[in-house]
Every structure is written in C-alpha cells, then in structure tokens.
Image (cartoon, rainbow, N blue to C red):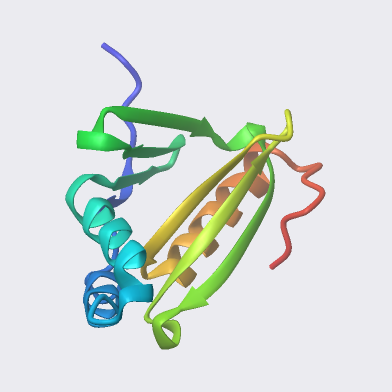
Length: 129
C-alpha cells in the first residue's frame, strides 16, 4: 500500500480565460489567443497535492509533468483577468521552468505551494511571500 496524497486542488484553467479569449477572437489578432484558450480548456488539468504538482496538458492531454516540492527553487505569480485567475512559473533546481496558466484561486494555491516548499526546501532562494 502506497503513501496517500492529500489533494488540495484538482481541475482545469479558469473559465474566464476562455471567455475573454473568445471575445478577443472576434478580432483577427485575437484568433491565436482564442485557439490557445480552447486547447487549454479542453486538455489542461492541474493537480496540486501535499507531495507534488502535476500538470497534464499538450495535444489531447498526452503530456504529464510531475514536480516534487523539494526540487522547486522559485515561484512567480502573475494576476490575470482582474485578479480572478492567474499564471505561475515554477523554477526547478536544474533551471527548467514549468508554466501554470490561468489557474483559478491562484493566490490560495500559491500560498499552499509556498508552505510546502518552505517545509521541503528550507534553502529556497527565489520564493518570496
């Protein structure tokens, strides 16, 4: 029997991201943003647990990335949609980055991730509260 994980958040991107992008799609310049938002809403899924961050995405949801908190050295959050949702960029020890786009409740999720990192990686260099 494996170790159980407590799921804090599981779901897809914020609906407001899709709605905003569809409205922008009425302009020719907004079409690429609209296509991106539709692909995200169909196949992007986040799972934040007490042990890891999992992002499932890509075409038809075929790509999966798992990150454990002890590997994270920096997290940056950016509000979008008047602060209703936001983006986060997670930087790992090896310098690679993972972008989490259009996360609902991003401030709460950021705080949760920050707390996990503080426990797992006390020497974190770029995570700021």
